[in-house]
Length: 284
Image (cartoon, rainbow, N blue to C red):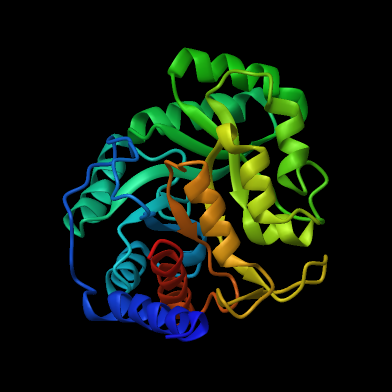
């Protein structure tokens, strides 16, 4: 069988795995840290909560169950920063009942010391070990103090050429590389590509600081590149998976689907199937 035929077969199997077992669930608690105890060559696929900005919590959970995705970085859309203990218990209870693990919170934007304080208190109340956040550069010293005080990791998210703070992962890495080891990156591979950084090279270059991944594809490696289903754009996912395997990546690969946020299920299903198929192919 040719390598191309094998690749297409494995991708098809990934799509099948996405669709034929939509209600499989595993027990997961929000406070549990993802420890990387995974099968060799396998990567946990999750969701970035922003994907569901136009859906309520129950709808978001239903979509995740349809595509058999069991990890989420929850956004304040579904769990507000000022949530009461009762609200937190309600939201986490729904995720737990669906077998979905809340492994992080964010993206949280931090422009003041008060916002940094609120983010860490929020993460502590939710019981997660990771914040995906965007503290401004002048707040990094203060943020580092909070990381040490709370023992909660923070992953700085890059947002592409439009972002004046951290357009690509290197912009963040250069500012945090000599700081506490619990300060790292949430590498958004789509925005990195649009900012001129090839994701697999970024993974190898910043390996010890990559705590989280936002997985997407884009139509062009340029500022005007548009979000698109994984596998239809310009990102080389075989190289990406090979790089993650080389650094023994211990985090979650969270899909962030932004092409059609009013009707994301078809695109999420296609993207998850393709991504899982590439994982199977690279590690077969």
